[in-house]
Length: 421
Image (cartoon, rainbow, N blue to C red; front, side):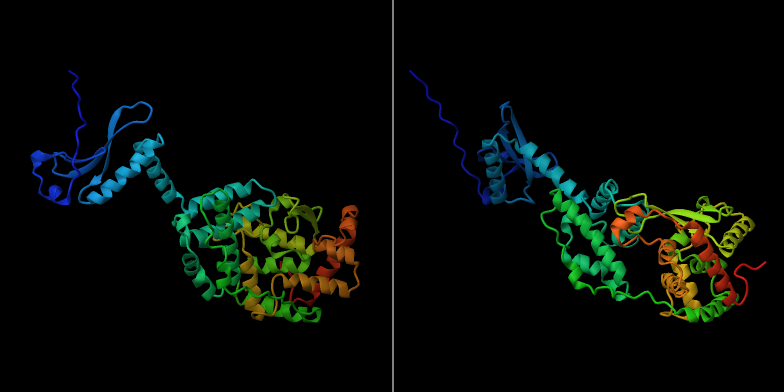
């Protein structure tokens, strides 16, 4: 006689059975591996029992507490797991990976993405040390405090707009423009690596006012004497520091860019040869180290450097910068300090730090000096690319004579010698 064994038929559970079941009735089985178990602490836990793919070892996985998951929800989770098993995917492995991905996603903040983008950007061309420093300072000052802690895929256009609107209301439109550019650099970096599905901040610049392009306010050559009189008087009244006075006067004497004067270093200055040599980054995208620029120094310019050395010695400073500052984060005087010195002398909107270069150029052109000498003094690249390639002349001697004559003229208009005894 052949004995036939029939598989045990499990009757599906009902909500009423679950509510009324006594402790000795557990575990309650719903079929296809789903059961409700009672733990020693009295908690009721849904579990799914299954055979692991490939090894066929029996195991189980917790689905959650009865208090958090209804019978219907538990059955839906069971069917989800059965579909995974049909594809030889272990539900336990699947859940572990999903949890890890969720954790990674939460940790994928804008700040972390910004750090990764910045490291990657530093490896590429046309990103000088100065640009890198200024760029990350913008992140630290404005961007990261506002949106740095957000998971990058949670950033919305509204979050971005609300984060930077206060800067717009404060009139810092150029700062906002730089912020939005850099924010979108980071967002595109994440987008191109598949870390976000879309860049939600791509168009938010449309919600902000554009910065107005301002001309470089300057004065006419015949107004130089008036400016010097007011500038000297403001210095004597203590409206700005002596460092600012000498930095602005060096700009007047040499026509150098305010940023280059602020960052001037002792190692670049040769008072014996009367030259100041440094690398110019501006306009040199294909030359990361910058091009060499040599400033010829007049007697008055040399005196300014010697005066600054004297001041630093008296203050017991040991700085690499000529216009050293113990308060500025950069370690040297800021362009803003130069700008404020001018404003406190002649008011706002009359003359800018860069406007001094226009004054310098106009004045020397009015005196009929060779245009090539003037352009070289201003560290301008030759607009004729072919001519610029072959013309490597520095016109050192000619420029030295020109700037000495210019310095003598400036000092003749000043109320007193530029560097007093």
